[in-house]
Length: 591
Image (cartoon, rainbow, N blue to C red; front, side):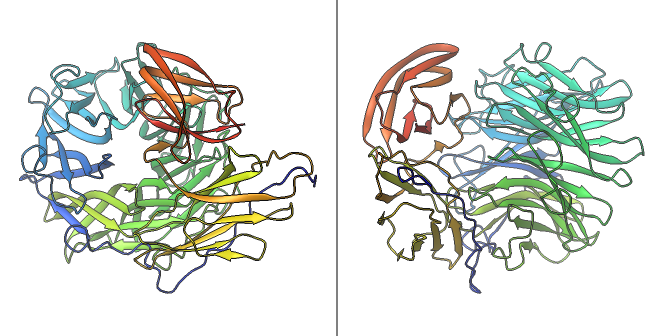
C-alpha cells in the first residue's frame, strides 16, 4: 500500500439481526389492516401494475370488464376522490375490448396504461395516456389512444412498457406471426427503432411471449419472457437490444438466451437489471410448482455463483409463482406473487440476499404471505418500494369468480450509504440514504475500533489503511438493518498525506437519478473528468450543486430535439455533485 493513497474497500458483513425486527410485517396504517380492495362495479377487475407518483400517491392499472382501468390511492390507502370518479377511471377505445397490463407515470405526472385493444378482426398493441385528474389526454395519439398492429394477423398484446431516455414509449409483448407468436416491440414516437418502430424476435420457431422489460445503465434494452421449447415445454427467454432495436450479438447467442429445464414448464414474468451488470428473471417452475429466480451475467451466461447453478427455487405453500420483481439500494432482491393450494391463494412476498439465499431478517424466514380472508384468493402481480422503504404489492382478489383490485403494504427498512471523495482534498463524504419509518437510531462502526451513534457524525482516520465502515439503523417499527461499505473509490491525497476525514451527510435532494438516467435524459460518462455529456431533449438552465445544496455552476441548454450538450466541469474539484436539468436531478462524480 502506498502512503499517498488511502483505499476504502468492500467488506460485506453479516446483518445485525433482532428478534423484534418487523421488516416484512403488514403495515396497519394502510387501508384496513394493511390491505385495500377496490370494486369497480363489474365482475372482472384485474389489477396488473402499480406505480407511484412524486407526491407518494399510488396508481394501479389493469382491466375492468373489457375496459382499461385505473385507481389512484392516497398515501393511507384511501381512494383519491380528485381522480376520475371517486378515485377510479375506466375507458375503452371505440367501444372495443381493451385489456390493461402495464403502467408508467411520466415526469409531468401524466399516466400511461398499455395493453391490447381487440375486435373481431384481432388484437393490437395499445396504450392510452391520462392527465393528472384521470381524463384522457386528447393531445396523445387519436383521442388519447395509440394502437399498433405489427403487420401480421392482428393477434398482438403488450405486456410491458418502459419510457426511454429520449421520451419514447417502448412496448413489449407477443406478436402472432402466422401460426406462432414472437417477441414484439413497438417504439411509439421513434420510427427509426427497428423497422418503422417495430421489432419482432423469434427464438426457435415456436411460440415466444415477452412479459417483462427494463433498461440497463448503458441504455440497452432487456426483454424477458418464455419460449415454447422443442420438447413442448416453456423455457425462460431473454433478449437484449441496442438503443436502435437491433439485437446485441455480444449477448447470449445472437442476442438471445434460452434457459431453464427443457423437461418442464418454466418461464419469466418479471425482470431487473442490477447495477453490477447482472440480470434477474423471476417467474415459475412446474417441476414442483414453485417460484423460480435466475441470475445471468452481463453477457447472458448463467451466473453459477447465484443460488444453485444460477437458479433459486422457492417453495412457499404449495402452488407458487412470481410476477413482480424489485431491487433495494442495498442490493437485496424483492419479489411478489401468489401462493396457495389450488383453491385459495395468498399474496406472497420474499426477499433474497445478493447470493440468492433468503434474507432471514425479513419476516424471520425471508417470506411473508398475506391472506385476504377465508374462501378468498389473491394474486400479487406487481410491487414497488416507496421512498420510505415500505413495500407495496398490487394485484387482484377473487371470490366466487368476482374479481377486484387488491393491494397490501408492508413495513420495511434498509441501511444504505455511499462513500465518495469530497470537494475538499483529503476529505470524504458519506451520504446516508437509509430508508424506513423515522425516527432512526444509528450505530456507525468505522472499522478502526471506534463507533458513533450520531445521525451525521464526522470521523478522522489518523493512519492510512483499509477500513470497513458499517451502519446499523433501527427505525420506529423496530426494524433493524445493517449495511457495510461497498465502495472502492481512491483517495487522491497529496504524497505523504496520512489523515483522512469522513463526514456523514443525509441524502439530498429528493428524486436524484442514481444511475445517470431519467425518463427523458441521461448523462455520461459518470464518473467524469473534464466534460459531462447531457443527452436528451432540454431547454432551459442547468445547475450544478454540491452535496450540501450550494450552487456552483449555471449554464443554459437549448435544443428541442434530442441532442448532446457538453458541460465543462474542469473547474470543479474532485467529488460528488448534483446536476439539475430542469426535468431531473442526477448525481455524478468529478474525478
